[in-house]
Length: 75
View 1 (cartoon, rainbow, N blue to C red):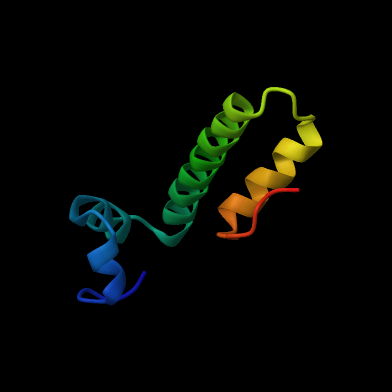
View 2: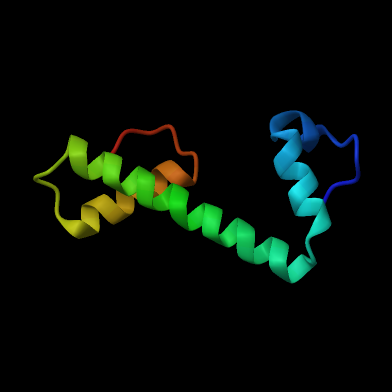
């Protein structure tokens, strides 16, 4: 975790930062993994709602593109 006062503190909810700081490194990693998986599921569900005709592989590619922060359009 960044030290208190780090720039990341300004981008995160203060309560969440406190919770993560109180956890062991292994527990913190587990928490963040769960958060990542939840975010991925939400993004994937949104893509499926927007593009119900897309095959699973295309949905997975678009999910990965969006999660990576790419600004280019899907093909």
